[in-house]
Image (tube, rainbow, N blue to C red; front, side, top):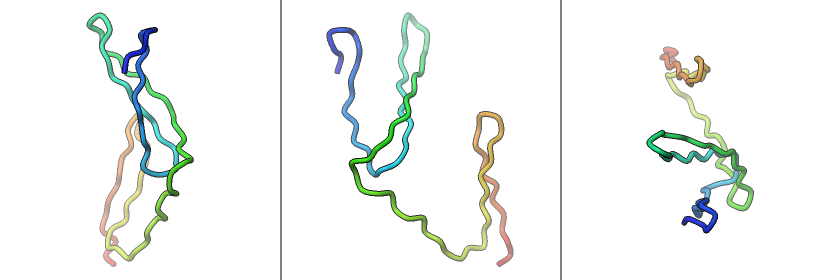
Amino acid sequence: MQLEDGSWTVPLTLPVNGSYRAFADFTVDGERRTLAIDLNASAGPPPASVATWDSIYVVKLREQGDRLVFDVRGDGG
């Protein structure tokens, strides 16, 4: 919803407690822009616990510049 001062507001319900990053994409005078804000949800349910199980795969997460890369390999187990 656009307010009188030209700003916008959007209702947002986050599914579980935790940290989030919200993005807003828009165009001004033909130029594309993206803004972001970090959010912290604390009024919802707690996040689910991390499940553990036996797997034949090993997955590692690493940063590569501005990207996140998942390395997946079978461990032969």
